[in-house]
Length: 241
Image (cartoon, rainbow, N blue to C red; front, side, top):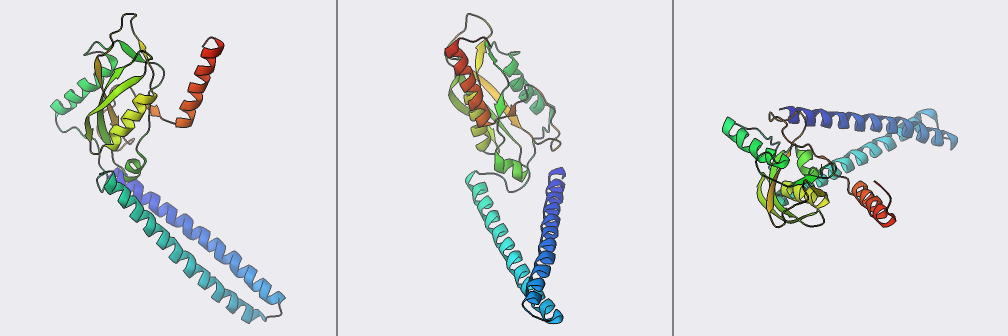
């Protein structure tokens, strides 16, 4: 309900801005055209009538062009939704039973090593990117990824254990793991073991699920690339962190 209300208010606000801008364009165009016609020797009434007719044609063209563009964008968004196998409307993460919430909490708590002995910590903030179309449609989702940690501290052999309601949430989780850096908790680390990490994609205020576990920051590829470049430069120069 909150998502639909927010989308409706956003649509109304965009329409109000469009018509306000169109009104300003109409006024300026009418004044400009009537002034040009008067400078050409047209009478006051004739210039106002001609300027009004020209502005009416302009309004018809602009509104029809805006509707055509809106329809094309809607069709394109619908095609992308079908390709990504997303629901047609808003979808929230809601746990109906205590058993469901408890099982998901156990999976989320695995990230902090409370239920399994994961000898790795995420170095720095964990960053994930919310699927763009899913956010626009008000769709929340869950993904559970299985992975291994290599000697360089990077995730490898990433597999999808579960993803709901679309695989786009797993792709976002996989991208987050590829950009993450892990550091060992102990000097004696075990390679070759696989670990599971759940990702819950939520829209603030849209669902009833409580926040549990690590909160990921927004993934910005440009910022991540800059941080990696700085880290590589420090390694080459031997500068302290």
